[in-house]
Image 1: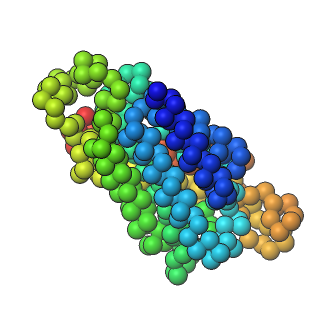
Image 2: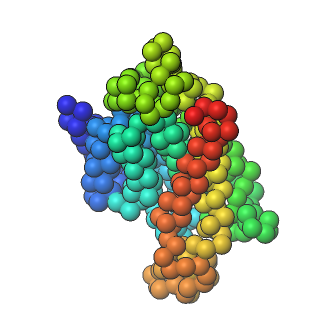
Image 3: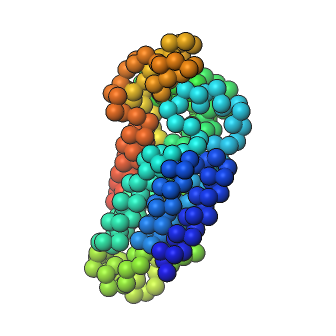
Length: 299
């Protein structure tokens, strides 16, 4: 039954996104697989948090698209997400969901919230920060750089980063509250108690929520994951991401061609693509949220 619900919901969401040119054919197929597995292995809270990221980020990518078009022409990927982008943004979250299904523990949920906060915060920083009226500055040198330059940050982008992380924390809380919970998921009370320890067993017996299903801890996890993920993404992008220079217009870009001509390699590792940077950034986001939960005593 869970597989059917997840499949139906994922097909509807992916189909709508494809019709609006927010997903390619490969991206829509990957989104259906990702969403179906997330719902069937996790819960509505896991699945819904993924959908919250996707819907909000898609809407932002369409906001003032014409104004951002010139900047986005230098990006390796556009707002029309392919399978690689879907996997880069949701693949690690799915692995955490699988881990939670195999060995239930609140740590999986904490890391998942951090991962989703990281990809959301990074997307919001890009989409909203691209509208900044002040020039971005390099996260490495502090010098002004051209809009769209990897590693460039703005005050507006940093505010968007925080907003994206808090949004995911709030969405995760609301979905866990409305659904059957996220920390224990589909596991029974005995399994959850064995995985989470005596404190969790007492809470489950009393019918209380785990701290990581309440608002403030989830907001903290979202903010920590969002900031760590987005800033590490910018740092890696400025230092190691593959960058090229257009032989026609002279712009520094993330893609191997521009203005209809092959671009000249400028710096970075060829394998360090935008998708690879996103995956590494989400790793940092998950680790930061997990560390925040551990330091606060929520695990």
